[in-house]
Image (cartoon, rainbow, N blue to C red; front, side):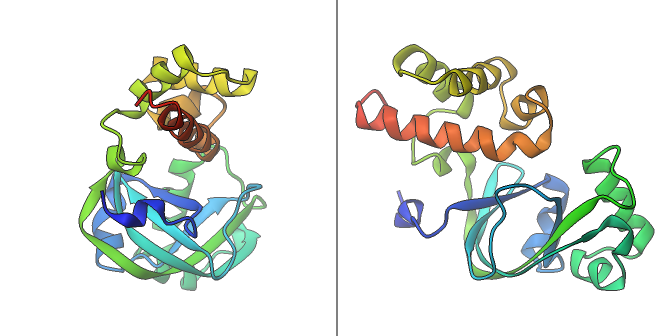
Length: 196
């Protein structure tokens, strides 16, 4: 296992749909537009860039700007790698159905620090275990003393089979970070107990 997986200065991951793989690898996509949430990276933070289940590398956040959806313009179109504002807005609305012109979004700009060549699988990402996230959830439910919230998240993951599907069941895609955090904590505890 390569040592960057114990890279404690990389606490947050930015997850992208598989359709953005080429734009990210070619650096045509330099920003991401997300719903505002409690856990946002700050300028200077290192983040994993994860796309379609593969970790593409580590990037540094250069700016974090909150603005309304309706105020997005040519800068965001260019930095997102789209051809028009209409195309960009259509993509955002595809990720966040029901989003409105006055909804606040966060524009996160990042620059690559290190690209992984080849990209690393999501299974390796979970501290080098040989288990899938679904399997880890089942093992954790059987072996760990969990809080009610952790149990709810891990049950959803074990039944739905993927982080994305579990997040949707728990209230929406914005819950993915919570699912991942609980999963990482479960992996750590299972390893400490030498169960995995």
